[in-house]
Every structure is written in structure tokens, then in C-alpha cells.
Image (tube, rainbow, N blue to C red; front, side, top):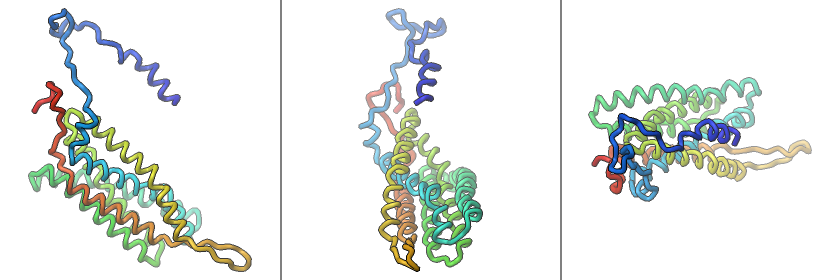
Amino acid sequence: MAYGVVFALAYRDAAKPPGRDPELPESGQGQPAVSSRRMLPWGQAWRNGSLRFFTLQQFLDAGSDVAYVSLIGTYFLRARGFDIAKTGMLASLPLWGGALGGIAGGWLNDRAMGWTGSRRWSRSAVGCIGKVIGGFMLVLVVRQSSGLAAAWLLCAAKFFSDWSQPTTWGTCTDLGGRFSATVFSIINTAGTLGGIVMPLVFGDVLDRFTTHSTVAGKVLATTDWGPLFLLLTAMYLASGVCWLLVDCTDTIKAPDDPTYPD
């Protein structure tokens, strides 16, 4: 809220009508001819099928990411039995994997466009393949007896999942055209909602698969993390399917905006 107040004070002049620029042509009323560009209507944006699947993809993508920042430390500490120092190191591996994946994904996206000559299928393929491989890595996590091997598999899963990030921002530009900022805001909002809703779902899943037993007078809780990783896998695969249904060249147009080129 404090930032909002500072922003409003610093940029309050931006909302005022612009002054007369002598280099601008005048309209019939002696005022500078200023384009009456309209905002993209919500209904017009939502009629674009690619945007709908793109929004769902981002909800699933950002929603699954929450597990890496909120639950993986607990997983290594309680399910794998590492001490706090080792847990801190292992929990950072997926984040490193995601950072490197973003770099690799940007390079791969550009190369795929050169190889295929198709912007539409290059973006869809990079996004889909990364999610499918990442989901496969998550399936392998639950099959590992070694906690260290599980940590490296999580790193690999995040690497492949996050190599779609440059593709996401490129798709915002392609799909949105003049309204790419609006598309970005829609996608960002969908990701935020995923980050809010999915922790509640993840917590419920872990609670449902937690059993309690009494040992030497103490109640011990044992959690089966397998269902959570299977849920994350399903989210990855669903996100990959959404990528195949996103046509980034289906640029959103507002037919009632005369300044927008056909």
C-alpha cells in the first residue's frame, strides 16, 4: 500500500492531458490530433481460444511452482531425514535448475524457430516438451531410495519445467500484439491465483496421506509424499497439453478499434 501511495504521488502528472506540442497536427477544433486508442475489452480477449488455454497453462505452471518454495524443504527434512544444513543446500537445487532452464529455454526457442521456420509450433513444442520431461522426472522422484538422487531429479524437473519461461513471455508478445501488456497482466493474474489456490490443495493432499502412530508414548506422524508428486506430475502434463493448444500467431484483435491494423 505504501508503494501505491508513493507511485500515485510521483506519477500523478501522467494522468493529466498532454500540453500542446507544436509538432503535432491539429484537429478541426484546434487541438492536437491524438489517437483514441481503446483498452482491449475483456470479452474480446476471452473469445480468443489460445488465450484461454494460455491462461490455464499459467495457472498450472505457477501453481505447481509453489511446491518448490514452500514444501521441498519440509520434504527433505522430514521425509528424507536430512539435517537442517543439508536440507538448505538440497532445497536450493531446484531453484538453480529453474534459473539454468530459463537460459536454456530462451536459446532453444530461438533455435527451434530457425530449424522449423514456424513460430507457432516452436513455442508450443518447447513449452510442451519441457513440461512432459519435467513430469517424468517427478515420477522418478517418488521411486528413489536415495534422498540425494531425489534432490537432483527435482533439480532436473525444475530445469525442464522452467525452460518454458522465455517462451511464455514471447507468447504474450505474439498473442497480444498491441495488447501484449494486457495479455501479460491476464497471465500474471492467472499465475498469482495458482499460487494462492494450490498451496491449499497441496496441504489437503498431504494431510489426507498422513498417518499417526504412537511409539514409546509419543505420537508420530508419517506422511506419504507420493500422491503430492503425482499431482504435480499431472499438473505438468496438463500444462504441456495446454501448450499444444496455444497458437501464438492467433493475435488478439479488437475490431472496434480503428487504429488497430487488420
